[in-house]
Length: 107
Image (cartoon, rainbow, N blue to C red; front, side, top):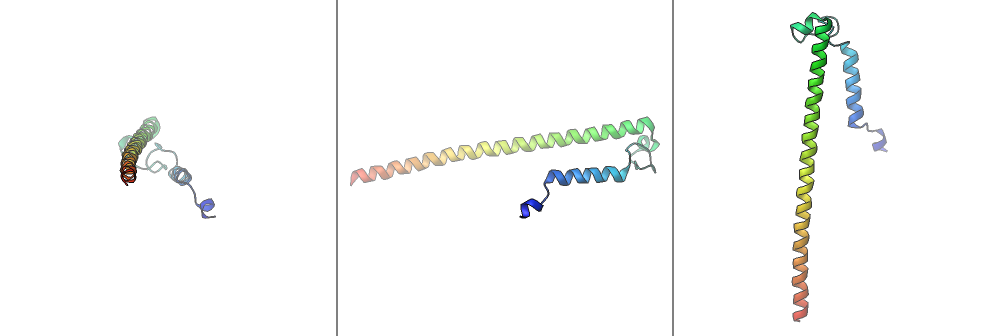
């Protein structure tokens, strides 16, 4: 029952993103107009402020994608490592089974 009530990470992030967008107003509108500070260009507002805000959003989206790709790569490397470890341990098991068979034949 708890699993049904627990929100997913994606749901939480989407809600946070929507809330922050609503609270800020339109980015790049200038200081005191909902866009907040962030440098002289963004404080001036207008087209340059909007462009600066858009470039900033794009930068952070790209950074997030790079981080996700690196995390996926890390997990794939971990999976590969564990598969190799399983194969190694299976060979050890087979080796020990062979020793047991040899001991049974020696009796």
